[in-house]
Length: 162
Image 1: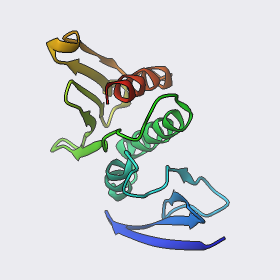
Image 2: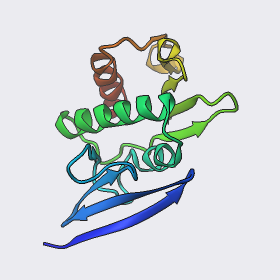
Image 3: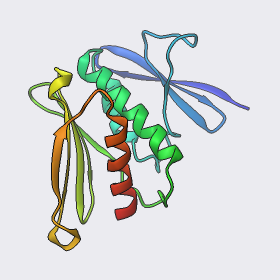
C-alpha cells in the first residue's frame, strides 16, 4: 500500500491531500493526523465533488469554509451510501461570490440543484428548480441545523435525474 502527501497551496495556507492506496483525504494545514481529517471520495476525475473541494480547500478558515466542509462531508457520506447509478453524476460546481458567500451547484439538463453558504449560517439555504417537462419544481428554504435530510433529498434528485 502506497502513502503519499500532495501539498495544495492556496488562500494563504498549504493544505494537503493524503493518499493511502486509492483512497484520498483532505488535510487542512492547521490539523495533524491525530486531528480532524476531512473525508473525501477519491480525487480522481470522476469525483463529482472534486472542484467544490478544491475551491473550499483554498478558502481562508472561517464560517463559510467550515460550513462548506460540513456540507461536502455530508454529501460525500450520502453519495457513498446512496442507491442508484452515480456513474453519470456531473461534477458539482462551486463559486465564491463577491459578498464572500459560496454557491455549490449541480446543473443538469432538467434540474438545477444548489446550496448557498453564507457567512451567517442562519442565512444559508438550498434550492431545486426543474423544467416544466419534469414538473416545473421551484423549491428553496434555509438550511436548518439538521441539514442532512435535505441534502439526502437533493442528492436523490440529482442521482435519479442523470
